[in-house]
Length: 251
Image 1 (tube, rainbow, N blue to C red):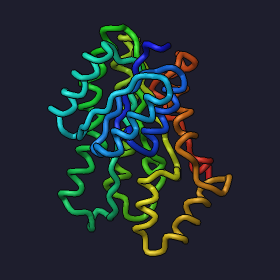
Image 2: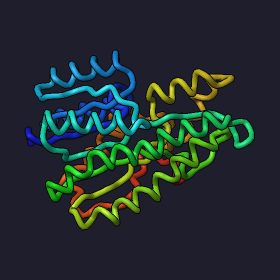
Image 3: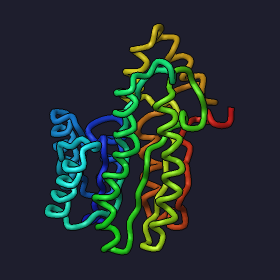
Image 4: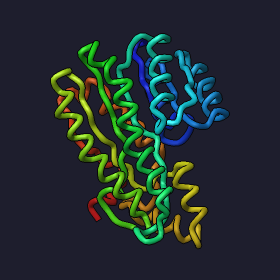
């Protein structure tokens, strides 16, 4: 497996970095895509320290030219793409009446258009190989409702239907496409949302109560499912949404 390549957007921290570490432990070389250069370079060194190769690409996934450049770097460095984790995302607080238009557009450019740009750039390498796996990162908020998340929730709900459409279209190339649906996961993104709330302690308590286990999940728990969905162990799984939500979806 040492010649297999995994590409992950939002790979400098949180779920993306946890995924990079999981795949690296299993012999994958890693392409890290992120807008944070400092964290991205640190992540690159961390992955290299695990005995595999890694390259960090400073890239805004809502920028077509930057994404295409990252794909070119990956092709020149590794010559292939086996797994694509479309993980980078943005959260904006606000109801349909509160959310500013610029914020709405920016969120959709990253959460949805970013998946289009990334897939359009990297999946052709999988088509050439006649095999590959794509894992999109959705959210429980695409299926369950909390206050003031109109843009975020609607974008994550759209990822579910996009995943199924991609799975149908790419099956002819032996490429599987699935989606992980995290619940309340203790990531920097969620921590930022908690800290921005009027009562951070109460918000954290409420989020923990959304799981039947009474706690938030970890990035590693989501990364484990990402790895399964990308592996040959899931060779007959495509177009699926796997909930990693501690039971939020059954409550």
